[in-house]
Length: 68
Image (cartoon, rainbow, N blue to C red; front, side, top):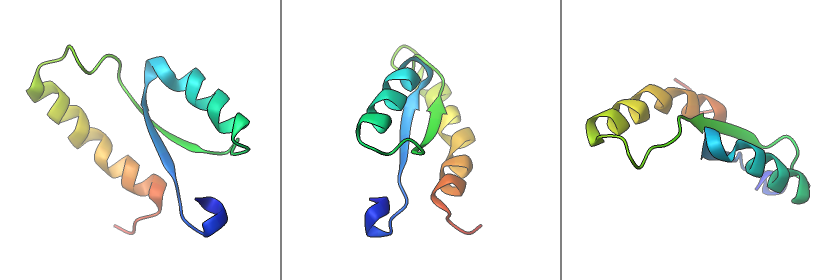
């Protein structure tokens, strides 16, 4: 994506950060930005997951370079 002039951010939970870092290095993207969410998400009540999404939304947009 970066080679095409597009910004990329991988969204992962805490549990998968090491895997995301390995994959980004293997794909020759060692500087890939990560938006790290709490783990686990699947066992949390929906209102809590919605709050997490709300809390992380702006940091994701910032990582993508979206103006406020």
